[in-house]
Length: 352
Image 1 (cartoon, rainbow, N blue to C red):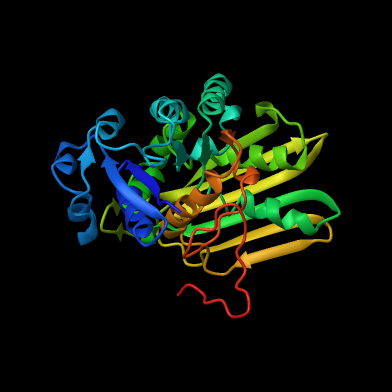
Image 2: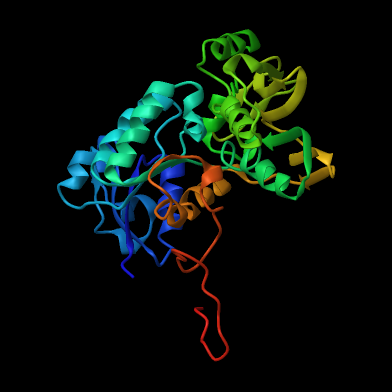
């Protein structure tokens, strides 16, 4: 089986970690990186990641520049949270015949806010015979895909609840800034109202849940709110400084009504110095189910894992703009299992 030729679009913290994890996969051949930063274009992926095996793998200024040297089967897209801008970036990749897995949060369910652009991308995927999916840890797993999977052992679903508390002190710099760290609470609230701050893709998580349950809701049925979490003492991390009275994070909520009932209740706290990080998913119905991760799912590490582990499932999926719920669930595999499971038979040697 030929290795999957993969390019990395966007070489920020998540993009570079994606390259590092991808380099451990025997089914992957990393053929190049893409970034708008001229300083990164002057270096190899080996230099940027510290992986000597990638010393001869170049970084290009654009997807077109990359394609002059090599044609990817798959592009990993980790370049922003704007769904329209991301679709604009992804469209040439699709037309060139590449599958795309993206960490753009609203791409989890892009029809909610960008139906026309989503339809155009879906049509382009169908024409090219490739697939695109938005994935990650949240959106992409904890508060959407995981609850959907849990409903598989239910005979009745009344309500889906998910709570996530993240100690942002452990997270990358861009996220610490995105949650408003160091801003005045009024400023952060204003930026959220303008769509310039807060956790992106939260409403899309709710929309995916509703879609999966067959609850036909509109954007008007999805209510999102945000409250700044205010520091009561000085906080200093590698990336930000927060004084008492300033924002140290967010408390963001999404609620969905269906036929007059609250059916989806999502509650997210991401803040510096949170003392009890955890993730809890509750399915109210028959039976009632609750699953808790006491320390929470590590966001950056899990985002990278979800992105890379979705690739073998993506390239064997039906062409189109796909949902995570339409793909076979990503799993950690040392050897790619494309097209089905492989069972070790008596006398057969397992791959180590």
